[in-house]
Length: 408
Image 1 (cartoon, one colour):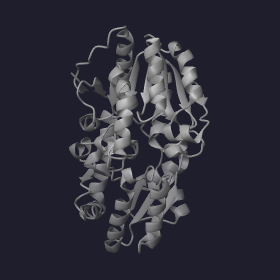
Image 2 (cartoon, rainbow, N blue to C red):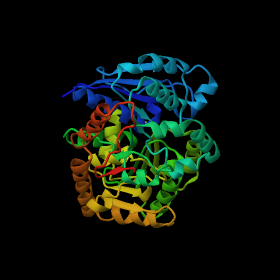
Image 3 (cartoon, rainbow, N blue to C red):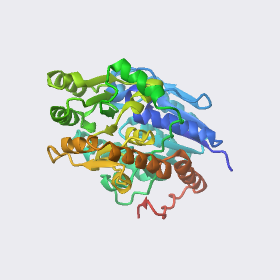
Image 4 (cartoon, helix red, strand yellow):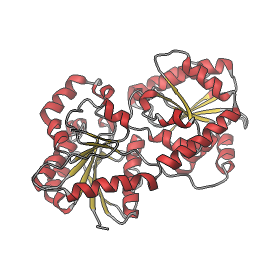
């Protein structure tokens, strides 16, 4: 096996970004486990240009190149002058570069450095090229794509989509050389769930027999948290014992609006906004929950939902979550946001049948074991890296032709 020198380039690795940062850190760790040399090249950026915060923990075998962002403007456009200069010098030391996300000057500068040095790169948009994402600030994104991003997209050795749904929803499809490789997750270590559950229920003062609905992720409009809160309030009027846990950082004005709305609801005593939780405390909410719910309006592939299923939780998702395997495995339910009242009815129906809920949870765990573990997914990604490196030449890379691959 050839040892690959792999660079994962990402605008930032803050804890506050949740899933994407965790996914990159986990990918780096498992690439090291497979015997490869891995660097994370990143800046001290956080979502929406906020001030720097703590980074996610990264395996000590991974070389982290962390660059500052000096100006307020550079924070807004996701650019680091120091990173750009370093990449121009150092990108030749890598065999392949994997650029995470697209809407940043870091992606543009990395692409320019790779093309100048003749180093192939993979582009992983993580849902950012979908129609819903483009609809946020559409004129700015159309201009940015036309002026800067079009070459980034067209020159990639391959585009890595996280799901077939993400590939279908891409605003740029014609001529795209793409492959579908999902986010993998780790299965939790086998331990008595009561080790986590009893302590957490006592800490948050949740009755031992209360059904618990869990949302885990950034509290953003993209995740449909306001809609989930409203649906839960209607559920509480039918089931006064139900509890909703909102776990994750609040996203600016939207997060504040969610908190304000919760404080006005009759069910507010049964809604716990816990902020971001990590490690043992995160395991506590996963072990305590009866089911997981997120109302995504756009996803590449929701890592939090995969983690929940790995813990044996049934999930309630929208069709925009790009997990058609959930109904296929009977691992939960899929709802449509436009059908008002359907979510409340679905939550009530699932919580009313503990036997069905248990069976769905077992199916969810089996789905992860069969489709989304690192053992299943990492060889697919390594195969792409290896083929890209072998095909590196002055000529454009060959288009991939296997199942679950897209392009002409």
